[in-house]
Length: 155
Image 1: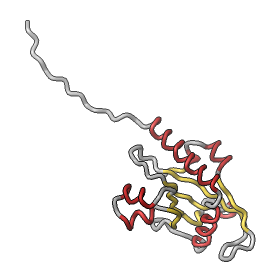
Image 2 (image 1 turned 90 degrees about the vertical axis):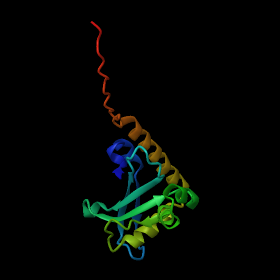
Image 3 (image 1 turned 135 degrees about the vertical axis):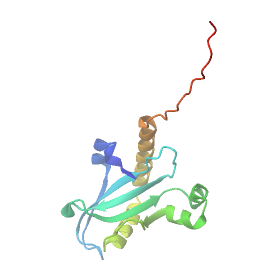
Image 4 (image 1 turned 90 degrees about the horizontal axis):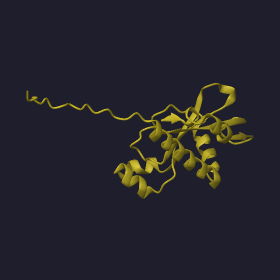
């Protein structure tokens, strides 16, 4: 997974979602940014984002890593070929691979509330399509060796 801002810096600066929190149970007051990461495998069409939640007061520390897949459960069942794994790809869940802070559960609840904003969901989908198109455009072509047949020349 690659941060969206590495390919679209200006757009990411304008369109990265943030939320200011005051008095939310289980979460310190402050501002939180939701950085988008997308898969850079040109053959993959996962239709998902990984969201890293950061806070300006904590430097590069990631407070939560959230997986978000916006397609239906049926789409992910077909994509991964396994019903249980598909449930983890669909919707918003905490990423089981990455370390999570003590606030990850509260941040997942906040992110789920933010997903009620359909314009934000559409933005994530648009960013995904932009990112994948750029991956296709900038991918290096596969070089195939072409062995020339040796032919005898007639003299």
